[in-house]
Length: 343
Image 1 (cartoon, rainbow, N blue to C red):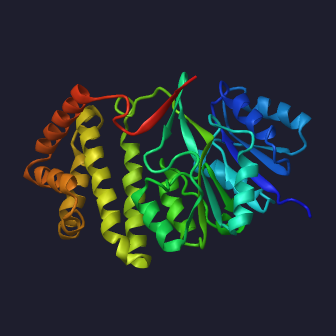
Image 2 (cartoon, rainbow, N blue to C red; image 1 turned 90 degrees about the horizontal axis):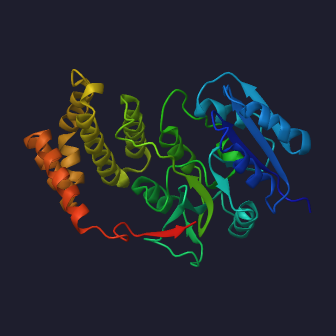
Image 3 (cartoon, rainbow, N blue to C red; image 1 turned 120 degrees about the vertical axis):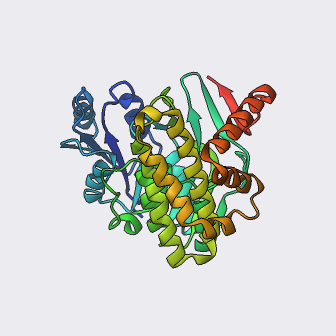
């Protein structure tokens, strides 16, 4: 029996420093029947040349050069060229354990899964973090049906919106393109894909390394970061149409995200001179007040923040700054339930 072919899509842009580590981790997989699609998204550095050099020595590699169009556009071009039974997305500054693909394929076959998700490490220069708040590395795989999957996707804890770190049956994603020209493109995409899933498997052994650059979201914040809210608002409409019983949970996530971004805009007032973006966020909460009030009713902390926000947004900002200060005073290495592994 011919093993299933796995198409691996790697969008590449300005990652000359990291690209060898990423590609090496793919070509050295114990599972060999791979189609590796490297999409050079108009990278101005040597990435295109490095990719071509790999293709000379590994016939499984196909390099596509295109003008810069962003991550979504690069992924979409990759999808248009896949011939595999399964598809895996890998970001070009991340890397994989060498048995990741084999493990995921075996579990997909065993459980007849449409998607298999692996656990991952947050990878820093000198250490790794593993989120063990819900599962330990040795736990048995978790199997979700569609209803349970959509619930977990909305909560965004055990099932993340990320496209990477998941093995997809190609047939369920091939006609759902990523939205171009936005940040947080996965938020616009994931729920459309998950709606088609009958069986979803979660593996707990961390097999994917999600590289964390040193950039700070506060210091590098721009109004483009608000794309995540646009994506969540789109998803809210989708949830209300197809998964009405998840509407309140979805509103909670959307409300938390709006409050976080309002605070980030306050900290970056120079990027919101006339307060337009803050007014837009405030307007959304006001226009959907009754639905949101119902959604957060039993979430004590979020309900409190919302009440403070309605008194005045800056009252909630002050409250959160005070809480942050208190956390710093009381903090310990395990505050957030993440296991640290020094390298």
